[in-house]
Length: 358
Ligand code: TLP
Image (tube, rainbow, N blue to C red; front, top):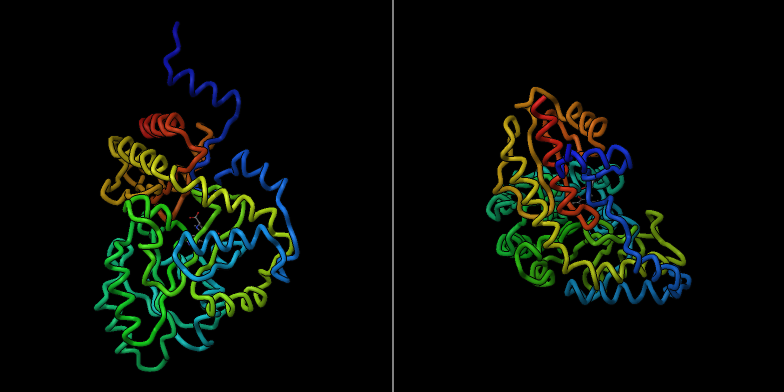
């Protein structure tokens, strides 16, 4: 009997034990070219500003994002924290979207920076400028030091926040003398989806953090960018939180390739995410809104299958070698990135179709 492609593919996965990890684009692997560049990287003591590869990465990052200067940090979480510590004073307040990663996942604003947060519920990740202004005006007790934005917005399903919204929120903030910070962990996904260069998308924000390690495939690292003065102060804060590195050129070398070579292929990830979402939306018992799938993230609800997200994720791993992200209740998240091919996505859709039928 001839094996269909699906039978053959599924058996091959079981025999080889290859895992398809769609929990997060943070699972992306560095390219061979990155590994080569890391091996050959020229390095120095970055604590003294002497690492030529880190310096090259920082200059490239600043130019690419349209800010005066940039600072290499070990993670996105640290980049955001350093920005908070640089812009604010302990005991003061920030404004952020209700489901912003800074608020829901990181929490350094409270645990480390000693800040209060005023949360504004946005629409697909975008806060209304009027609501932001109301929050500023009605703030009775604490001084608001910073307005935080996020693009793409992770908890809104990787939604792209429109540049017009960013500029309106920035206008309101600046009118009241308040700076703005953008968590742009996936800013190049946003700019790719918009078809607008990233520096134009972030033109109005005072500082931005973006990650080299997600869709851009560097093994570690994020960048914080802003004015020369802001980055000089941020450098002090990076030291305070233990983020000063030494011969970091080894990893910065991969970061340079991330910015030079990996941005232009992000569209492929978005197409794969759409393909995945379309496949899933045709499966009975799975609920998702195709309009919410704008970049490389796909959120869907498996409640209609009579399972919660954890049980669904265990089933996919045990029976199909697929790692997927179980969120709260029956909400599941999947991400596409360079190491997830179209064939992998077809495999995932077929596996979920079969898992749902039983
Ligand atoms: N997000 C991770 C997890 O924390 C959920 C992921 O898998 O999506 N901002 C945004 C919008 C993020 O999504 C993340 C990571 C960060 C900041 C933090 O970056 P890292 O992981 O480098 O500290």
